[in-house]
Length: 259
Image (cartoon, rainbow, N blue to C red):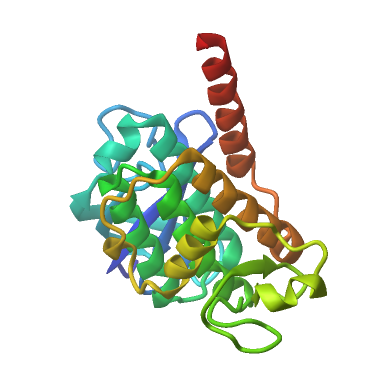
């Protein structure tokens, strides 16, 4: 007799399998990340078709296997990220967030903290007019799940907490103006961008971000900082991240053409 249980989960992604079937990866709150086999999911009238769409959140009824694939039987309390589907940028950022969360921990490892971070960040992404800021918040918080702890609070050399600062990649820390010479390759961050990065590090929930409007230069500086940190210390290269880079390049080219 097959034992079924209920669990809450967020759909990370879906892969076609054979002609009509699919593999759906779900980040469950209770059991961590699991791969589920759904027979005939490609059929339009499949009862779990809506619940297996990426970024969806639901309470699922399924069989959890200790090894190999698990199986889904039903779902309830389905929540779709409608605005994410309708916005190409939010869609790309959400996909990147899913892939980053997937890369951070092994399958079948329970992490309520990571689950809640992803859940709240998806909610914030739906509501915001500045999706890139939500993603940078997510990236900063994700560093802990990769075993990293950046120092955003005080200078790495003298513990100064006020004044002009920059970020040092080798020190994994902010440094004050009195110690800029200690790192000739410091990030040369604008004061505004670094202030935002420090605020993101201390905010407890992305729901606190609200509606923030930042200049493109500030966002570009934030992106440059996060790219350097992830390249130096995380070292993963996701296709979804590359797609975002391509979108930004396309947008720049279109802006130049319009001028």
